[in-house]
Image: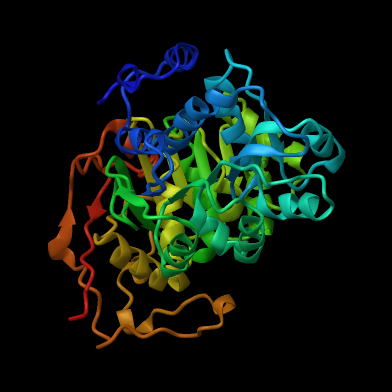
Length: 452
């Protein structure tokens, strides 16, 4: 089965799906939807942008139709847990779109917003409850939410929920659910912590995986630009002179860093907004809506805040600061090249971040090509001996050796002049890599690997 019409969906659901412009299922949908409709518990490993929301939402809606309108006060028939407010809101928007011709009742519970409307929405009961763990547990403790009738549980982005410290909240929530239920767990990666959680809450689950864990989207053209730490803002301004970078998601490691970068862009006349945990929910939602509509060209985000960003048409992801965890890099660049489109990622690497870059290359099992043809290229960073690499001091791990201390293999023999920086990438992907700099020379870096 490859088309939604093959699934036997309710005609009202199918009508809504077709109106959304969807006809052919993605790989995760092809595998997950029939399994869910066949009452199987499920572990699905899939990156963002693969269509996973529809993969659990459509069969869930179909199954809930059998008891449509049969609600119990303060109760929900299906519970979907998400790590962030933004992701919860986007799941809700998708479910509303798929069920717009039905009479299913859906509501949201999340922090950062007033609790009274959420309590009121639960008074008569709902069919689908979408929630973040912290606020849900608060309302459960206040006896405003009863989970005793939940038939279906979905954990979306389980790895991120555990990264954010929600494991105890999740365990407390699950303890209040009926033991007889269908459970679906979706995660971009499957670390031991998620595996342990899955084993404790699922019954003979079917496991599906649409892409190997910790690999990047094949359609993302990845590049790294070596630059002194103090010149990253100048490099960003230079890169954004290229109008082909029309919808850009920029990542920083800290909230204050996101604010600083956004202010700088505004001073340059580039429409931008910052999104992070210190922003109010209204401010975060406005920033997302403006970015989605094109009113804002650049959205600057931290990893946690960006986890819920689901925006099509992101042309470029810029890692203004390289993440200290390879999995975060995978999640970041997965925000472009979605829904069959192409995209590019540009990572600004200073001397202290070289060890992070090395970890990323080891994780994704490929080198990230270095783009040298920009005014701020730092040859010394590109050529630094591996033994001199160090992690930024704020991680508490200090200096980091690289085994035998030999220089990284990135000599002149690996340089390529590709006539404008093509490296096989479409023009939209190349844009900004050497904006205003001419030739577009690129170095393919080989990463030394240990025998292990």
